Image 1 (cartoon, rainbow, N blue to C red):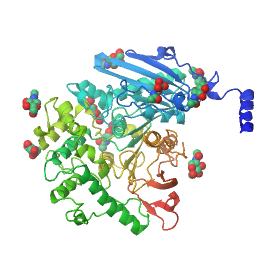
Image 2: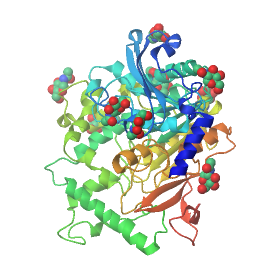
Image 3: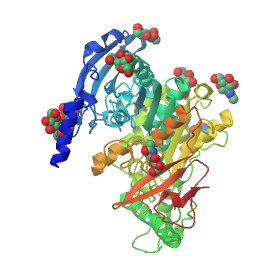
Image 4: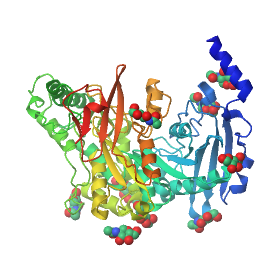
Length: 555
Ligand SMILES: *[C@@H]1O[C@H](CO)[C@@H](O)[C@H](O)[C@H]1NC(C)=O
Ligand SMILES: *[C@@H]1O[C@H](CO)[C@@H](O)[C@H](O)[C@H]1NC(C)=O
Ligand SMILES: *[C@@H]1O[C@H](CO)[C@@H](O)[C@H](O)[C@H]1NC(C)=O
Ligand SMILES: *[C@@H]1O[C@H](CO)[C@@H](O)[C@H](O)[C@H]1NC(C)=O
Ligand SMILES: *[C@@H]1O[C@H](CO)[C@@H](O)[C@H](O)[C@H]1NC(C)=O
Ligand SMILES: *[C@@H]1O[C@H](CO)[C@@H](O)[C@H](O)[C@H]1NC(C)=O
Ligand SMILES: *[C@@H]1O[C@H](CO)[C@@H](O)[C@H](O)[C@H]1NC(C)=O
Ligand SMILES: *[C@@H]1O[C@H](CO)[C@@H](O)[C@H](O)[C@H]1NC(C)=O
Ligand SMILES: *[C@@H]1O[C@H](CO)[C@@H](O)[C@H](O)[C@H]1NC(C)=O
């Protein structure tokens, strides 16, 4: 103890203080450091020098009520300058704020990272921004032009300009202005620009690839809610399908019963039979409904015919008569996703969420309710109006590809918020629009993962891989890890998808992402398995520890 401490003292006396606090490394964290680079309509609202470290020293954020969408602070930050920028463009009826985390000049690696938001949240996502500076990246997040919690859509009422800002415009402007401020501040160019976002964050990344192909060199896109114009009508349709008081109503207890039955049939019984040698127990699991339908395995614990029929409709792809060409309007929920069904199917504040899209975004009519729901009309109107032009369905992204851009997309196979099929549809339609895409666009399914993070404890599938928001969830919910990257494998591209994406981009395509090893902890035991590039799947080699990644190959 004492000798180590003495050596640190000797080091400090001989070599001076660590780089983060030496004079040549310090970049002034003052408004005046940005003034020369401010375009018109742009002001610096605040600068704050974060000392870095544990506790409050390394904590930064705005909290509620200033930041309702992302009130959580980033934690464990290294030394950096936090900046809040306000953009007001009355000529374009657009206004928004964005935040920057700027590491000291001597640790900035010339890379730029922008992180996404969730659902309809308005606010700077400081927590997820915390990831970037650990890699040495200058990092940005936009508030998308409004301040609200994730489930709120009411700010869109009679406010088409705010919807455009949320849909794509605030992010496009934030990245353009943010890049100029970063380059001015450091006095050198950004070498590479990246995106990391999940859910709405995934949509935001894809949308920028379409509207601003030069914004990013690489985008890490998780479970993208890209098809806004169909996702919202599908959510309303789930609420209409599962009305309280009807025979087929599935309440939380009914959903939990279904979840248990699916876990039992697909995971426990199959896993037992195969001794954990199946990567995705839900893949190809033929549910035996007769064991769930009353009287079922247990007459005291079963679903009625009407409830089974509701459940089957939830799993099935949704075909509205308004969507032409035989395409599904929206894919159904995958097996294993049941634990996440509550918000869209059952009561509580989410009932309002289920009507809110039509009420506040589509029809601008605060009296609209489920009683006014006409399935075919809602879908047709949503396709016609596409509020905020938020849907990212301009599949020909040849300008992005030709500029060297890369897309790494991942999606949990047990996602009950944005069904996995939605990413598959995005991938397939890009192939339809562009032909071969493997040189710049790769899709990775994550067996057993829910929406963006976590897994059912029965499956306990590896899911931690540097995806957007994952490290923050681990830190916040489980007090585990450092708030960035994969705990124990920080910054290693074999395990961290963002680093793998950087290697792919910066090798000019010479080191494409073939697989990413995902991690989880079974109690205290490390469990790892490769995530394979679609359509390959992880297959057990026939020998070796099922918890070790090299016991599996991508086939
Ligand atoms: C925060 O920084 C101060 C000044 O360097 C230091 O005295 C204190 O111990 C730090 N707190 C924590 C929790 O690291
Ligand atoms: C969040 O960070 C700010 C700025 O460092 C600090 O004032 C505030 O106390 C932090 N909030 C929490 C909950 O840690
Ligand atoms: C609005 O003004 C800004 C700043 O002066 C300018 O960059 C932008 O092009 C203008 N936008 C429109 C739509 O006129
Ligand atoms: C940052 O470091 C680079 C050299 O890496 C130097 O050219 C530049 O002037 C420095 N910028 C500032 C603001 O000190
Ligand atoms: C708004 O919705 C209510 C309830 O359906 C309806 O009675 C009313 O006519 C609608 N208002 C407008 C302006 O469409
Ligand atoms: C679809 O069904 C709705 C009723 O829900 C009907 O009003 C509409 O005309 C139908 N649209 C088409 C294209 O058939
Ligand atoms: C809407 O967004 C798409 C890209 O997704 C873009 O091609 C189109 O020009 C935008 N439309 C308008 C009216 O801004
Ligand atoms: C895709 O867009 C590019 C221009 O951005 C165009 O040259 C090309 O023809 C388009 N490809 C298809 C299949 O439409
Ligand atoms: C990443 O992990 C792999 C496998 O554990 C190891 O071989 C490699 O050296 C690590 N790479 C870095 C940059 O640490």
